[in-house]
Image 1: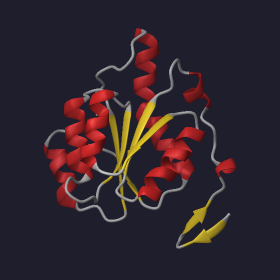
Image 2 (image 1 turned 120 degrees about the vertical axis):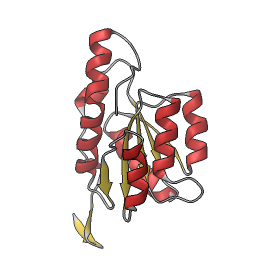
Image 3 (image 1 turned 90 degrees about the horizontal axis):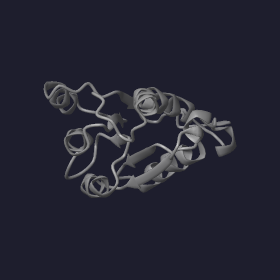
Image 4 (image 1 turned 90 degrees about the vertical axis):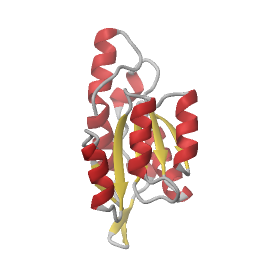
Length: 163
């Protein structure tokens, strides 16, 4: 691993494979949204390698359109995006897909944006950019843990789980 701008460059072969994601009947779907295509594409590649069904969008409007066709189990979104920011997307997503868990990430999230979600009754996890793949996958696993446990216990697909 070589350091780059305070972060590490990691080979995809070094990204851990999440065995639980691969053994679930039908892989869990994680939607990645970032207005920087390289970031969205890279995160989606890491998630796919780890056994998740990863889909990506480069703006919030497209993400909501995609979710209306196939509901994601988890939304991972950048906060700072043009037109509709990640907090607005997260609020729209949980309104559209109540079972969807949310993780936000940003290099410079504004407290006012996050307070809007908190005031609406949501306490979305926030990760700092850049993030190490292992750290991201750990947060994904923690966020999806309740969904996969409840789905297995109930024999159902997506369930309404509070964020």
